[in-house]
Image (cartoon, rainbow, N blue to C red):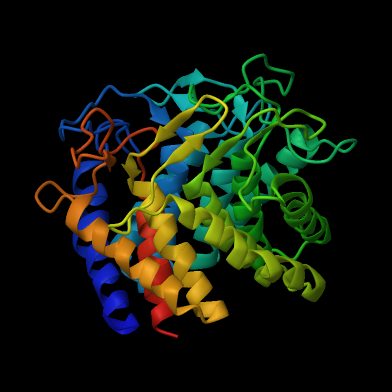
Length: 396
């Protein structure tokens, strides 16, 4: 397959399957915004809560789709998501955004999870990129200021995971029940790096520039394991980790997001440091690739467990991450890995009858229907981004 054919295939998937699913099945016409869940058996759950992650990622996905493809229907969906987030998720008393709402839009969990605030910045800044609405940019800047005021650890560097609604310390800082309860994590830092990069594209603020540079350096100096070139995942406030867990999907995602951040920052010294390690991180991540081109989820050496499930989001990041290595470093093997993973997605994860993608398949090839088709974590962000990234890159 040529790279041009690759770009054509992902664009068709985006416009004929992914986006129509969210437009036709997830719009909540009665209560506003979008429904909170369609389960793994394709049943709508209208009373499901509405998560900040889901709504911010819907905003990003349709904003980016409109920016690239300029179709009014995508702008309508992006605007719907933007309006709902501003009206319901923003905490007008203490700042920041709520973690979770009830189906009717009332607050359900008011904690300030920094990961979620980061995604709100990502979505709002992408909307501004798409149409230049200054008021929306101002909301994104307010959230940047909140993260810097309350989450940034000026003494020991980095960002704390979570706080109470009033920005006080919180006992359970975990992003999900699958995570360790530590003050600093790779995942949250990666998803602050990502929105800060996007915000810097449209707002060349000196403090933002400084903090984006600092985030890249945190990955290079603290999070990257220099012996293995995997990323360490969980840290205490002093950047000490007592876990040995490899998340292959996060490795390959970080490989290209770090590169994107350095390219956007435009600092030659930082870019040189990043480009010295991007292929090495990708190669370390490749340890998780199976014979069919798909990448497994995680190896928890501390617990002695390997999660060999083939998750939708891991495959998306595998496709982008290895294409990035091919594009910038001329690695033909990386292109082959990207294409093979796309081939796995086409044959195993896309639901051509009901729309969207399955959450995962296990090592025996069984579809995971216990997890959502759309929900708190199952959003149109990873697969939309994969399609847009490959489409745009193959058109260059």
